[in-house]
Length: 233
Image (cartoon, rainbow, N blue to C red; front, side, top):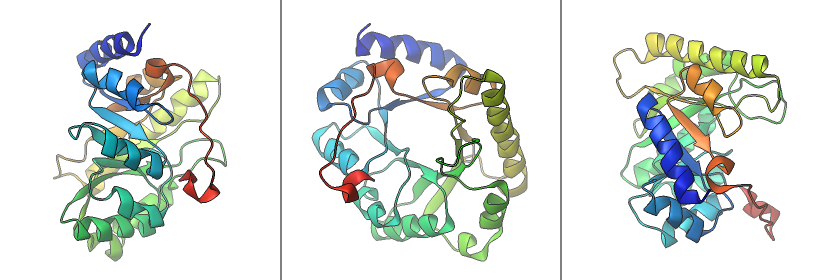
């Protein structure tokens, strides 16, 4: 199936469930993204800042860009003028930098707090205690140019469905608790971003409101090699 056909099929499936589709366009060409765009897709996820900036400049300006990969504080300034949602906030320090750059750009930037739910050391994210500590801190209360709109998590890369299911369930239960304790009066706190091409159906069963799909839409990804190690994030 073509990218267009994949977008139309998945979009139809997700719209019935009221789940947002984030098309993961990392390593994909401008032409591939335009094919998805012309099929009606407007939300795209990237994990490399340099690549996202290049695509932002080359593509239609009504695209909503999501930062879905680990974000270094020194790269925030490059995406602050246009980013729609930063899904991968994993520290107070990063949140403070996003706030600083948002203020410079006279914006409020929406963010998801990334929670560590996987049984893998390579994944980023806040532990449960760190998440609570961040939300209770005076430093967080002072931030006026960021808005936390939900949580994000990445399950363990495994074929054991029971484990993935448990991890998604944990994040969903945590979201409900955090909503009740810290965001009860804020309608904007409503997103649970979990689920990728291999496990998005399980994620939706556990309450995901947005799924991040790459290969399901675009086919297998091509690894892009950067000349400079510093350019990778």
